[in-house]
Image (cartoon, rainbow over all chains, first blue to last red; front, side, top):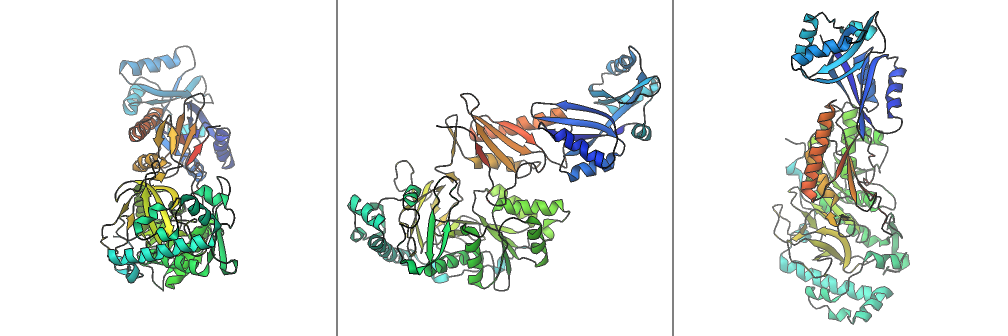
Length: 143
Length: 442
């Protein structure tokens, strides 16, 4: 049950991150989770937002390059080893994690993480079969 | 299937554009003798220079005798700024044009009415080979003013009797409205600006193909076959090359016919020679070198053996279009603005050609040459594709390495490729600034 993540290409230049977030603010779009992967000359801003389709179109109208990626949002126990046990499972099945980052909000005693693997379908099945709960679109965007 | 209509093209001046070799050489020699004498008698610069070289107008008995005359260069034009090369009486001057002078003193040229008529005729020849007729509308988006582009194109359009729309450059929204609403049959501007207009239509959600445009004469900057195909594909038009320079007369010195196999030089007015820029030796047909022009009929500022610094080759074979005038190939560089990086000669066009083969890239790019320590570095900035952008760093870095490798294969030295955001590289509304050389050579 993958959810839609928004990826934005940012040149490694002063003010570009601000400009992208300012564009979202003006449209009243909320950011639920975010991470930045950076290289020497560019970065990729990855986000789970309240209205991904609208976010994509407003960012594009400001000439940003934007794409969607399917990611998994899972709940893990907020305690030592909580995330480790999910990764151990994927590791056993040879699934490679491309990137991972955490939600800003917490849901009860659980922590929420966003996960992108080289096999989302298999990961999704493994995790739900092993009683990790996967968060769906609606829940993720409205947290 | 293109909107361009081959059946519309025609030869504007058959008696001049389809001469036999003998007829042409006879005319050229007669005119050459006349212009050398005219310059010698009316311009102190030529008189002194020829006296110093021990040559006189009487030494011109054959076309080859032109080789006895010394070359003139841009420096000579600067040293005679503003009007010391003018041959005609001041009362006969009716218009002046000038280069931008970005590299120092500008080059100015005053035109007589006769010069303007010759210029109009030369541009009209190019427009005829594009199929422009009396009832057509031609939007001219070259700059108007001291720059020769706008006025030259307009005079050619009016010579045919078609409607010229003097758009000048800039104000892209209005350019788009007028192209669509009039609607324009032809558009003349720099190829980079034409591509920018196509992109602007796309951004506005309008397919450029839906604009009734059928073709145009594009020039005033170096471009490539790859840019031509992009331009022709986007608008579905025939994009033909036009060449010229203020020092000689302006655009129209040479124009491409619809066969697009070199630009026909108006050689009844401008006599071309190709020389080796180092040895100054005159080169035969097919050999690349610097093109040198002699104006055979101009009265305002005649130029005799003017070194253009433009690198090309010429070809006297008869063209399929029926014209017999000599053709010059696309300019592949300038003998003075070629880049020397790490001691290697690099033409920006070689890099452009690689970029244009990458479908995922926009045609905007910039080459930045710097010397952070002791070694030169070439950075090539390209724009990421807004539509198909992959969010994987591995893919993006892979793309950069792949492009860098292709460029290295083309130019022989390594470059650093950087990715820029869509539409972030400046689109010039005149000549695109493709190369920024930050090295300090002093």
